[in-house]
Amino acid sequence: MKVVALATAALLLTAACTPGSDNPGDAASAPSTIKTDAAQLGDVTLTVWDQEVRGGQAAQMAELNKQFQAKYPNIKLKRVSRSFDDLKTTLRLALSGNDAPDVVQANNGRSDMGEFVKAGQLVPLDKWSDAYGWKDRYPETVLQYSRYSADGKTFGQGDLFGLPQVGEVVGIYFNKTKLGALGVEPPKTWAEFEDALGKAKAAGQLPMQFGNLDKWPAIHVFGTVQGRFVPADQITTLAFGRPGSSWKTPENLEAAQAAVSWVDKGYFNQGFNGQGYDPAWQDFAKGNGVFLIAGTWLQADLAKALGDKVGFMLPPGASAEEKPVVTGGTGLPFAITNKAKNPDAAAAYINFITSADAMKVLTSTGNLPIADTSAQQAPPGLAGDIFSAFGTAVSKEGLVPYLDYATPTMYDTIGAALQDLLAKKATPQQFVDKLEADYSKFTGS
Image (tube, rainbow, N blue to C red; front, side, top):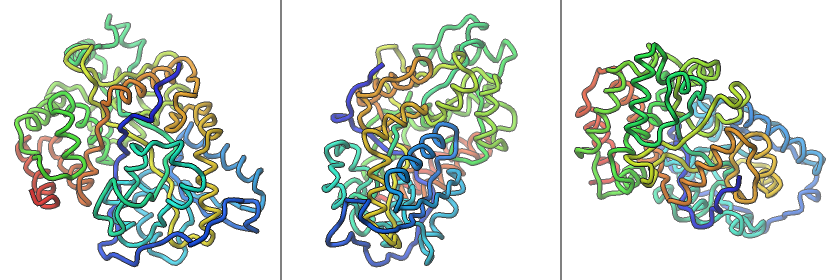
């Protein structure tokens, strides 16, 4: 099936991770003149760090790298592929060293890309964007979320520092076979969803797989619940760290209480705060659990494991017709470091893996391309569900940003606060108070 074009969509990007340097360095700059004929750049070795380690993610990267080297044998790729968490913990140190990679996937939130820009560790891409026509393929509603002012303070305006490959939304995977055994149709409203969770629990099934050892998965679960209680514009203001809103509202408190109620009702697996994210979704892939709140990046792996037994839906609203409120945006953008030995070769590589042909490879390997999405033909089954869900979220302007975008320290703050909330070591009021302290300190609200 085809999905709507993104040119009029307001897209938001994926979660931030690692804090960068607190000491700003000299602003990095692109060369005064650039070259786009990669075959004429001489012998070059590009070191590329990415986090495309799971099934379909790894497959698309391997295929595109193979095609790139076949087309440009003068450019040798040295790929270093790390998990999301490993990349999070190593990239900051790598960028400050003398042997930094040439191309990296960098989270575009303030605590990563913003700090890297502030430290002068990433090169602005606007000259290559003009030369390659990226602005013609990527609407500004996408590009703006890889834009920063040179001091890293202003997010959404300024120079372009990255280009993403994929789109994503955080939705609800469900096991069709298990729902059928419960006599339940895929829920169309939030009340039906919670009723399905209760029926699964009563039948001795695990209602929802959840692994929160890494802390960030709870951000996605809470964001899903929050969207049922808090207006989308308030979530957006909070998530972008803009003055004018507050965590200390009745709606946010109600969302925190609702999340805790899922713990009280036994909807999650035992020991979820001590279980990793990957083991949790892998357990769901083995048929354990009725629902899983997770992003579209698991599409290829879950389709391979469960086939036509797995479906995907956006978090439902109070009614089936209600506008969706769903966490989502794009995958991690690719950026050029200030230590890149040949920035033109690095830009040529980024152009290649985000080209129109690359989007076809992404589709064929079970990924959700962010550019030329409407031109792709989604395979039947889970991929069709995901393309349709993404198209609905985009066309109805229902995407809201990841909550840890808000401040340079919010990733750590909200991750720890959610672990405490769901472990019942903190009350819902203490939870929102902790987030408000971080938010208001940054915004001056």
